[in-house]
Amino acid sequence: MRKRYSIFALLLLLLGVTLPLHAQTFNVNLIVNGGFEGGFVRQDGCGDVGLGWQCFTNGGRATYGFYDEQWPPVVAEGAHGQLIEINNKNIIPADNDRYAGLQQTLRVAKNANYTLSLQGMIRSNRPGPGDEPGRYRVQVGWTYGMTNTWQAVNNWIDVGWNNYYERLAPGKISRFRTTFAAPDDQITIFVRVWKKWGNAGEELDVNLDNISLVGPGAPPPTPVPTRLAGIGWPRAYGMHFSFAYPGSWMPTQNAPGDPSILETWQLGIPEQPREQLIGFFSTAYADIKPTDAVLTTPITIGGRAGTKWVRQGPDYVRYEYCTTGYADVPSSFCAWVIVPVNNPMLELQMDRMINSVVFY
Image (tube, rainbow, N blue to C red; front, top):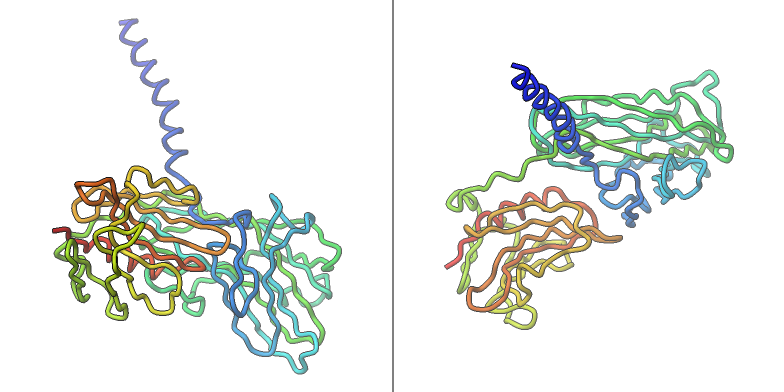
C-alpha cells in the first residue's frame, strides 16, 4: 500500500511540474515587433513606423508624424519605441477629432482568450488635464476576419491614461491591459491616438511601447484539398506543375537560369515591384535555413512536406514556401513574395495559392 501511495505521489509531483510548463509554452505573444526593437520602415503619409505594423490617420487639417523614439525617459523598455505626433502648428483653423494609429493583423486560435497590453505616455506643449481631461485619448480596438480597417472598429476601449506631461519634461509611463475572446481565426489589433480639439499651435506626442497580445498560438493552417484550393481562381499550367492564382495576377513563365532550374514563373502580383516567384531552384530544400525568419510553420505542398517562413528585415517582409524539388538533383520547389510591410491579405492569397499546387 505504501508503495502504491508513493507511485501516486510521484505521478502527482510529475503532473504538478509538467502541466505549468506546458501551459507556459502554449501561451505566446503573437504581436510582431511590439517592443519596436526590430526596426522601422518608412510609410507614405506617416513617417517611420515599426516593422510589422501599418499606420493610419484620418487626414484633414492637421500634421501627423510617426518616429523611431530613442529618448530613454519615454521608452518603456529597450532602446526604441513608437512616437506618434499630431499637431496643428501654423494651421488656422485646424480640425477637431484627428486620429492617428497603428494596426497589425494576426492569426489566432478561434474562441480562445487573449490578453492585450501596452505601455506609453502622453506629452504635449499644453500639459496637465486642467478642465479638459478628455482632450487627448489613447484607445485600442480590434476587428475579426477579413475586416481590417480602423473605420470598421466598433469596440474602441479607452486605456485610461489621464496624465498629460510637458513634452520636454516626461513623467511616469502608463500601462493598460484587457482580455477578450477571439471569435475568428484572424484578428486585427488597432491602437489609435485621438486629439479632440483643433486648438491653435497645439502639439500632441504619444509614446507607445511593449504592445503584446498573449494567448494560444495559432495552429498551423489546415491543409486545403488540392481540388478545392483553386476554386474560383484561374489556373496556370507549366511543364512540371500547375497552380491557381487570383484573377488580378498575371503569371508569366521565365526562362530557366541560375538559381532557377526546370521552370519558374513570375507571379505578376500588381503593385508589388519586388521579387515574386514560384518554381524550382538549385538550392536543396534541406539547405534552406533563413536567419531572418520570425515565424516557421510546417505545411504540405502538392503532397510533399514543406515549410512556410515569414521573414522580416529592416525594410521588407518575405512570405516564403518551400519543399523538395526535382527528384534527380538536389533542389527545392519554392514560392515567395517580398513586400515592404506586413500584408495579411496578400499572405492569405499566397497560402491559398500554395495549397493549390499540383506536381506532374
